[in-house]
Length: 117
Image 1 (spheres, rainbow, N blue to C red):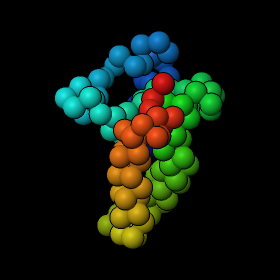
Image 2 (tube, rainbow, N blue to C red):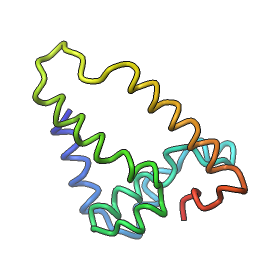
Image 3 (cartoon, helix red, strand yellow):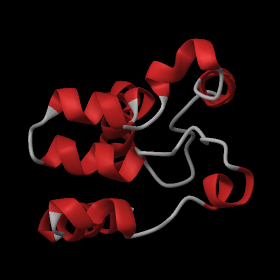
């Protein structure tokens, strides 16, 4: 898991900054015209790699907010014996509710600031 994450980050870091938005189009956005919770995540991670925190926040604030948590979980998983639970189910359900709420909110006119730009 960790080697794949590192490889993905290296590939993303070596990509042209202007081309990142064109690597993959979001299927939800293409089919429905709505922003999914992950829209802008790739550009957000690319901005993080470049040290541009404000730009990363503009692309996807949820991605920026959960990145430290995900990195901590990846680190913890690498130290945990295989077959043991790394995360309690309650945490997963809480994150799921947060992601769904973020996906709904970023498509409401009141929360237009959450759209990737």
